[in-house]
Each structure stands twice: as structure tokens, then as C-alpha cells.
Image 1 (spheres, helix red, strand yellow):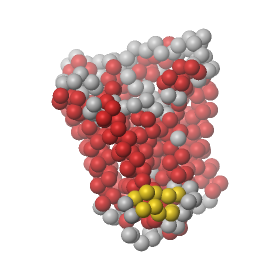
Image 2 (cartoon, one colour):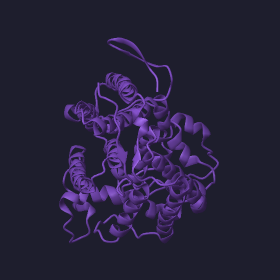
Image 3 (tube, rainbow, N blue to C red):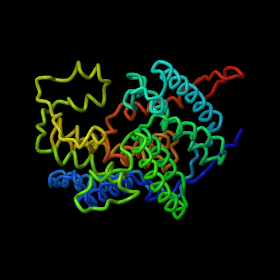
Amino acid sequence: MEGLVEKKIYSSIFSNPVFVYSAIWIVALVLFPLVEFSFLVDSNPTINGLIVASIISFLFIYLFLKNLLGSDKNTTISGFEISFDSNLRFYLNFLFFLWLLLFLLTCIIQGGFPLLWLFSGSGKTYADFGLPILGGFNNMIRNFLGAGFFFMYLMTKNKRYLIYVLILTTLIFCELSRGALMVFLAHLLGIYLLIERQKLKILVRMVLFFLGLSGIFTILAFVRGAGSDYTDFLLEGAVGYSFFTWPLIYFLSPLNNLYGNFENLSPGYYPNNVLEFVIPNKLSQLLIDKDIASNDSSNLLNEALNTYPYFYPLISDFGILLAFIIILLMQIFISYVYLKALRGHLGSILMYPPLFMCLALSFFHPYPIELVVIFYPMLVLGLYVKNFRLGISTGLRKLEL
């Protein structure tokens, strides 16, 4: 049993939400006109203006809240001293066994998992894996576990916590879902950048991380049938970008989809598209207003490249102005949680990884309005439930924070 742990968190540019968001979108705006892909359309000045405005607003919101809350330098995490080992560790163990039970139940009901289906030739794909509602709930637990166990490792340097992370990562790869893998790894990266304070080490490991991620995407493209042949995506005479071609395709295609379909959007000022992400499919169909013209008409490259940036459903439902106001509210919440995390609030530290993920993958999918993010605070609050009891081999143990 580890002793109580104290550690200091320093404000690092690599974990700063403004830096993360700005870096993602500035790189996207710069690369888009430079790459030679045949499926890219012309950029849209209105969308570009929204992106630039959201970067500027994020900076001002963060600076205002930082000044309001006071200095964050060299803050001691006193919260880690409060039943750190006896509460968080057992809470994570409990959730791990719950998650594993639900994962195995899904495999039994569906007769396997995507990687097994691929080699057995069953005809099923990664899109067929998962149970309604339960699948999203289990993914949320998995992401929390990844961030929680990795946090425990960073705090204690006990490598047994990395075994849990490795198990979770391996089973995600068995699902052949690039989205699930990106979300999970973004949670790990978020907690790592928040805890690690050696900036040179961070920089080196981030380079290695993105190189490894590029390799993973290339492998996933191969096992999912796309292979290494990306010539159809290139302009005539272009030679491609070798190792980085598939990552660039995945990175730029969501923004390209929005550019290509922006003129077709006609906001109905009712959350039709938002409801599809917030509420499970069968329930959302009951709430969708069918009298409002659908904004689903789109010109996608193919079914594998069918993603949009995070603000697509907001623009589609509410228009540019209201979408920007909603983005401002998101930025206020994210900035507040991050600044509280820097001040040693354990709940905020555990809450930051999904918010970091939303920013890092804001180019890829509207994760901020997904149930797996909206209900994530419930898992964090579970750590604070008094009289929380866990059944383990030695019996029930009462945990109090």
C-alpha cells in the first residue's frame, strides 16, 4: 500500500487548454491549402472566421479567469493527502471489474469482437460492435479508468497501474475503432501533460507519441481494408506523404466535410442534430422535430471519412452566432476546470482529461456534446460519495474521502 503522496503541478503550455485548442486549429488552417489531396474543396471564410474568433475568445476567457482565481504557481496538491490510496485505488479497481464484466457480456451477446470477426471472415465490422446505451457507458468507464490508472502511475511510479492501461489499450485495438483509440489516448495524454513538469521530456515524448499514433493509424487503415494504397486521394502527379498520409487524411477530412457542406446548412433553431449526439438513437428520434428541414445532406468522400468538427451540429442547428455563444460557454467551463486542477483539486484533475480530449479532437468529432463526456462528471463524483463500499475478495471495505 503506497503512502500518501504530495506533488506540485506547474502551469505548462503543453497542458494549457488554450494552447491545445489553438495549436490544433492553427495547424489545420495552415496545412489545408498546402497538402495535395484530390478530395479537398476550397476553404470557407465564414468557418475560418469562426475558428479564429474562437481562438481569440478562448485566450481572453482563460486570462480573465486566471486573474480572477489568483496565482497558480507552485501549488501544492494537498488534496492528494486525503485518503489518496485507500479511496481512488479501490474505486478504480471496482470500476475496472465492472467495465470488464460489461465488455465480456458484449462479446458474448455479439459473438466476438471486431478483430476476431476480421480474421474469421464473419462479415461483421467494428461498426457492429457494442450494445445500445450500454456501449457508450462502458466506453466512458474505460476512458476514466485509463486516465485514473495512468494518474496513479504518475503519482506513485508503481508499474502495476500501467498493466491496467495496457489491458485497456489492447482491448480497444481489438475493436478496430480509430475513434475509440484516439479518445482513450487523448485522455492519457491529458493527464500526462497535466502532471509531468519536465518540459524537454514532454516535448520528446510528444514527438514519439505522434509518430506512434501515425503508425497506429496506418495499421488500422490496413486492417480495416484501406491498406497502404492512398493514390486515389492524391492530386495527379503528387507523391503523397508516406508515413503521414493516412494521419493527414484523417486530420483534414472532417474540416473538408464542413467546408463542402456549409452552404447547404439551413439552421432550424431546434437541436435536431445535437440531440442525435446527446441522447441515444431511439430516444432522440422521439424528440427530433421532423417538420424542420434536415441538414443531413452531405457530400462525403466515403463512409470511412464521415466525421465533422465539433461545431458542425451547433452551426447546423443554431447558426454561426448562437454556435459561437455555446462555444464561449464551453471555453469558460474548460478554463475553470483546468485552473482548479492546477490548484490541486483532485476532482478537477480527474475531470480535465475528457475536456483535454474534446479540445485535442475538436477537429474530428463533436465530443463536447456526447453522453460519454456530459455524464463523465458522475464518475468523478462517485469518488466523493461517502460510505462508498466495494466488494473484493477480502470482503466489504468502507471508503470515505
